[in-house]
Amino acid sequence: MLVFMAISMSVKADNDRVITFEQLPAEAQTVLKTHFADKVPLIITKDRNDYKVFYQSGEKAEFNKKGVWREIECKTSAVPEALVPEQILTNVKTSFPSAVIIKIDQDRRGYDVKLNNGIELEYNKNFQVVGLDD
Image 1 (cartoon, rainbow, N blue to C red):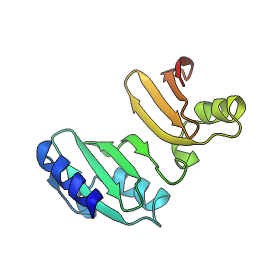
Image 2 (image 1 turned 45 degrees about the vertical axis):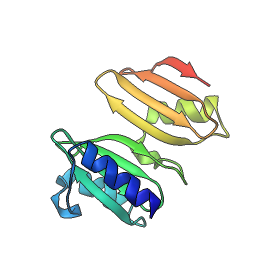
Image 3 (image 1 turned 30 degrees about the vertical axis):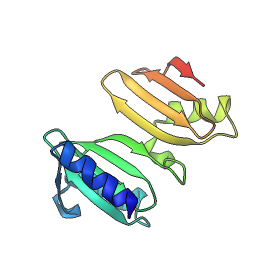
């Protein structure tokens, strides 16, 4: 209940409006049906530039206005591997074999990845590591 209240307050503060699953762009719906079919959405919001889907289990997915994912965050599980570019997945599995990706976001510069061991990696558009925080 507290999570719902916190999200509701955040929605109002950001001028987001609550929408239904069917109001998401088709590409976003496909991603969610494919990779989060077993999860129950708590709330779905839309603002001028993006869509956000919050799940009861703590996961969050953010999409741009065309429905392309911008951020996937998983609190209780790993980000679905099929959503992670192969080069990043290979790099993480090689460099941090016991870690899993719990958050990934992408923008025009590249990707930011957070692992369950607290390490954060920054990749450029060519999938080269350009930053690391631990």
